[in-house]
Length: 291
Image (cartoon, rainbow, N blue to C red; front, side):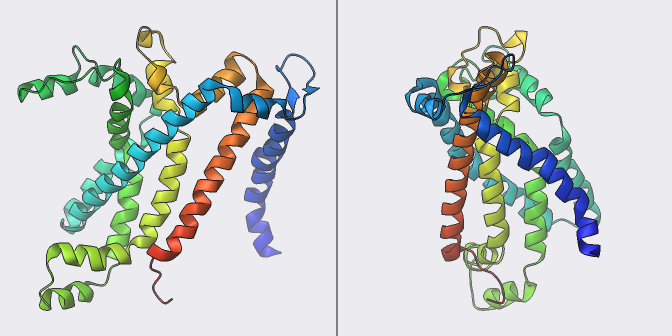
């Protein structure tokens, strides 16, 4: 009873704010509903329309490509920064951890607006810096081929939480393993590959799942930069039409609530399948001490 008493605030919140809305959205996905009139049952028509909607395929493709670019780059940069922090002294480590984590609490809307300033093709700071080295910067915000890479670079601004997770994992690796490997003549790369990666594979697997789910649900920065303010007018946003943005447009701009609910359940199914595949593959690559 004591355990349930402590868990009850979360359980009540989950039922009210998660479970009931999920059931309601599934019911709405089987209706034609515009939030102004009573919903009309249409069966699986919304799901059939999903299969025929070219914008659904386009937004899904954009989202999957972005996830394939964003997740590995986020994990690689975070691991590199965590490795650097692990080598710093105790006093300076706390300062750097704070500095790396501060961008994590920056509002996503502000990051989206910042994207337009930093990655402006004519007068953006990024292209200005590239010009100092004789490199002609691309049109980040208008060239469809560079929109997603630019958004990935902006997303690397806030990797602080992943850095903290990797730092904790690196600190937990027994130092005697490195000492034994060094005595055996193992190079730094071999120590990283055969000791560090297996010992932190649990943290890597956790962040892989979390980052994949976050990338498939990306919304704030892209919507703010390309759809959400007057300054984005005139920018080519076709390559930035991510799935959640299209879902938002259908639900809250066009008031196709039933169709948007069906889109939400399609995204849920995709995320669940991808996560199950990752969990299945993790049995081969993730090392758990004691097993």
